[in-house]
Image (cartoon, rainbow, N blue to C red):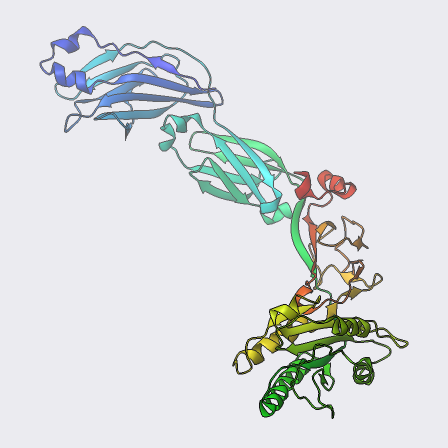
Length: 493
């Protein structure tokens, strides 16, 4: 609580007979306040004057031990009030009824200032707490003198962290702030009780502090390697191009693009199937509505590229410039091809570089629009059909595989840790030991199995485990509570 001693200044009658009455009226102090501290043997005095003269007419004196001494002052302009100046001083001792007088410089005269008093209490206080995450002692100072701007006289606070008896200093600092933090000195690496001290030119205060466990967070990240499925690309052409030479040139060009893209994406490629083939099987680029996919031709091409142990994914790429829907006979033959099995399984996906009518008539895995035969972007469009689907990938992570929590050996000062969260469900294989560093081999297991997905649908998987580690003071009671709880310290706060 703050003690205010209100001093009402009444000058003796003699002051009004002085020839400089107006000037003295301006110079005299007003609104005196005395502030007392219950745990400091000091008295603070604050008063106001008008600063209208180029030099002071006199000074205030205070009686100390039956002797009048000049009152040391400081001046602070008061915002919003022109020429008003706040003055103040801190006196040693507690003056319940301080006697003040105004001494005129010339002529040398004194004028007593009548004082009326009122009392309450005030104090200098502070709170010190060990902040484990910053490994520091945070000290919050409460000084009522600062509120009255008396703190400006003695604004330097000396902070120190000391041994439990407060006799020996471990670390010191000087601050003008009412909230400050001291780095925890090396001795505080040993848990226990310590002392924090705040001192000024007026007094010093001590309070006990207790160390607390320090926790840090780190992320354990694991990215399972994807498995790439073997793939076979089957080119299928159904073109309508009257000019035989242009037909042959275009088919060779598109076939080369498909072959190069398949090789670049790690897939095998079969010889093309010509839906619009002539009698000799060569392309004649003449579309027929009753065209079908010859299942024997499809099987003959695929069988030679199948590894029985790892059946491939088959991507059929149909290239067609026919502005017509896929007819029922061709649709039926495509469905039959997709169910082709002979002692092993293959999965067939069908993609299309074709017209809008063809794209809307069958559930193609991927479609790109046909433009025109001489379009310089046609090759790039065909490449994009393959790269959207290939490669096929999936994740398969065995449940018995142990993933270490630490990619590097844990720091020597680390102690126990626990898993706060993870992106995938996991089974940790660790126990908390407050007196030993974590086992570098500690880790976790988890299961992950997915189906092969085309490139456009494949989503990367990353397992991230958030670890909370006790790095110091791990035998404190708070660490024992942390060990027994399933929650991390960061979640409990």
